[in-house]
Length: 79
Image 1 (cartoon, rainbow, N blue to C red):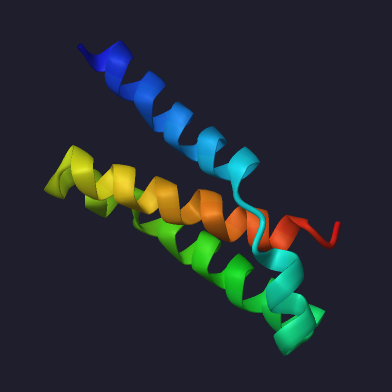
Image 2 (image 1 turned 30 degrees about the vertical axis):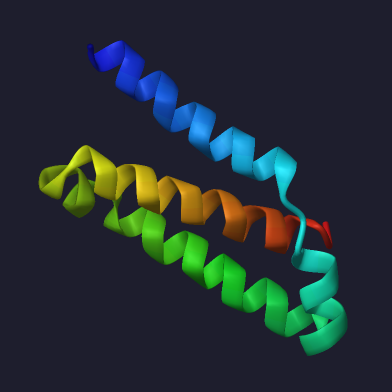
């Protein structure tokens, strides 16, 4: 049902948020400011697209949430 779908969306985001941490490596290679800027931009842009993606399919929203989770991890390693 709808509750299961919402629960899955939250789980995908949190799982990726807590299990991947490439931000340190990327900041060492490209610099902290660039890494934060790029991944915050990705996260913000995808967040703005969620309503549009929700009209397309639930899989599009899952994919966006996964990418948002990865982008958030990469940008939060500096905070």
